[in-house]
Length: 126
Image (cartoon, rainbow, N blue to C red; front, side, top):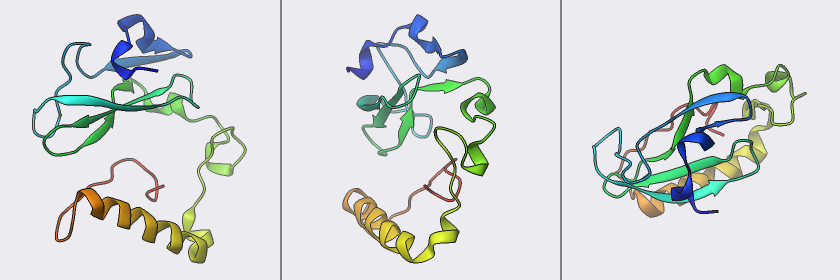
């Protein structure tokens, strides 16, 4: 699927009201105001997550953002009963240490030390 093929009517899907960040012709980075390019689509969700990347600061963001973020989470999200659930990674520390080491290694490939990065809105970073 091509991320740049989204239309305004595709922004309202799954009963969730979405707001697009930019137009089909130009998406600007909310951090540095540079041009953003389509990166990939995560289509296991409905609606799919349309991920774009800034050409200058490397920020990655979902192009469409729900007006009401609570609509993304089913009632059982925090208890593990929803189709997509939150899991407190602190409960599985040993296995997650290996996962985090790999994640940080990948971040270091595009943002080598002593660089900075910001992770927003991902519970405990998952």
